[in-house]
Image (cartoon, rainbow, N blue to C red; front, side, top):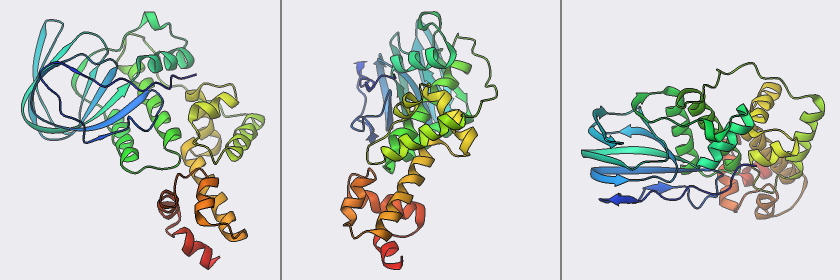
Amino acid sequence: MHSLRAPAPTRAVSGALPEPLLTSRSRRWSGIVVELHRFSDIDAVVQPPDHVVAVHLAGSIQLLQRRNGKSVRRRIGPGDIIVTPVGQPKRWQHAGENVVILLHLDPSFVQSVAGEEFALDPARFEIQDNFGTRDDHIETIGKRALAELEHEGTSSRVYVESLATQLTTHLLRHYSTAGVPSESAVARLSRHKLMRALDYIDANLRDELTLTEIADALAMSPGHFAHAFRETTGFPPHRFVLMRRVERAKALLRETDLPITDIAHRIGCSSHSHFSVMFHRVTGQTPRDYRNQA
């Protein structure tokens, strides 16, 4: 079972860091915190309690990184990636302003994925420091995680946990000492397991489902389940959960006189407005308009 602990906030050992523009710390996402920062004229020493992946969105700066007695200065611009593993303090210094997505991964979450997906001993690998590389896969994950943070959705925990697992798997393959092989072909779910997954999702639509909970119902690791589910159905789990919620809502809007607020709660939405935004994003209609036309 993946840790549900959110990584602790990064504190400056010396100097100061600004508060994030956006943060997911109150969202109870498993093993990951997503933050959007605007940094200006930074000179600070930090010791993050987690693995941090920085995705630079805007601004071009000359950045000094000093860690373990080594100093590197590099120009960092939009699309550049920095990987900072948990461990020794690091000094950041730059003039000017930049906008950055920070993806904080709980070390216990990384260890869990390493053990479940690749049977790795946590004591026998390390995430490696990487300063200013280009990585389209990480950039895409970062932007998708930020979009989920900006636009809350009912299946956000399923989606973000899937993104966190993808990011961790990518780090283990490309930014670690683990020597993990490249991705191989993924087997489909058996008919029995597929039906168990569908039944579990349908029975729990009113709850805030997580990828781990669905995978646990099939006695599978979250990463293997997500890949096998997509291979079998053509949809990632989070998208399928969203579709099922919308289909359940359509049926309740057509076939009952339940208040829209009650329908929202029955499909896992926290409020009428939350439900309306989700329903409109998928169908192009508000729930009320759909009911009136049904």
